[in-house]
Structure formats: C-alpha cells, structure tokens
Length: 97
Image (cartoon, rainbow, N blue to C red):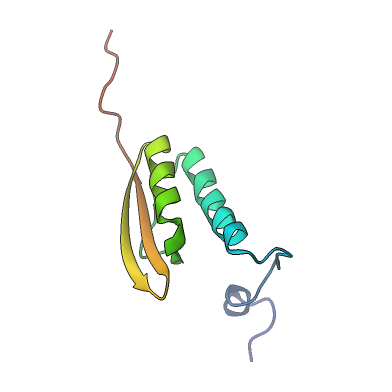
C-alpha cells in the first residue's frame, strides 16, 4: 500500500487543481515554469530526464529560447506531447582588456 506522502503517491496526484482548465492557461503555466528556470540561469532544461511538455507550446518555447539565449531541440513524444530540451548557448564574444 502507498501512503499519501510517499514519492510515488505525490507524483501521480493533483496537488494544486486549477479553477481555469482552459488550454491557454495550461500552456501558459507550463511555459512560465520553464521561463523561470531560464531566468535562473539553468544551463540545461528539459530533456529525457524530465516530464514531457505540450506540443502546443513549440512556437512559444522557440521564442523563449531565442529571447534568453538557449538552443531548443524537440522530439515528438506522441499524443500531443513533446520532449523539449533547452541548452544555454555559451557566450561567443567577450570583452578583453
């Protein structure tokens, strides 16, 4: 039996139900979580070690990656899902004194 506080139970239950179940809200919330990680400076976000994201966010993800200096690679995970991997670009130009 899995108790309510085990990692397995927490992984598969809704912790914070949203009153707005619209697609735009869900996509925006998902993109916002990734945006915050970009702003925090993470060098790699997403990939096979993380959960799939909505395919409906591909265009937004690309604009976010361009704005924050990340390369984006996506792989189709089926049924409207993608595996998105954001990799921070290294600075190519440096000021030398």
